[in-house]
Length: 141
Image 1 (cartoon, helix red, strand yellow):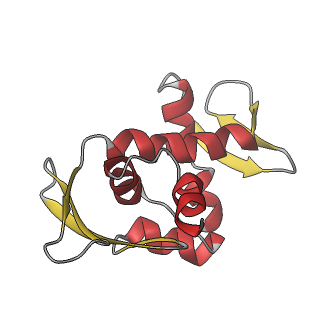
Image 2 (cartoon, rainbow, N blue to C red):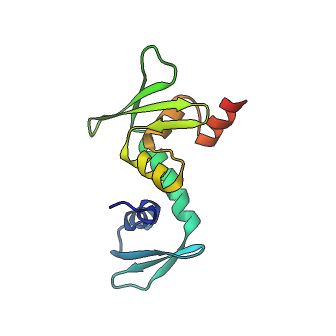
């Protein structure tokens, strides 16, 4: 089951950030840091900011491998295809952001009230934007 904590502050994120050298037993979110407990090693503190940055950068990196196609007859609807998995998700853009049909996007909306998944980052890149806030700022001008 996905929770707001496991979405950002996960053992998988720790492994991606520092490598697979040590098995992660648990991640505890504290005020400005996370305590990461490893099997057979001393615990380590990692900044929550590092987790949040990784959360975004990981999705941006995954977006580079996706294929974006604008839907015929629509300037704001896109199909985003993952060639390796064979999956296709629909992304719609609007003035205040975007929307995607994937589970990651739905989880982010549920827990954080806003979202941008790898499919969203793929569309933003296709449109020439680096971040969702850049896109929103330009659309609201």
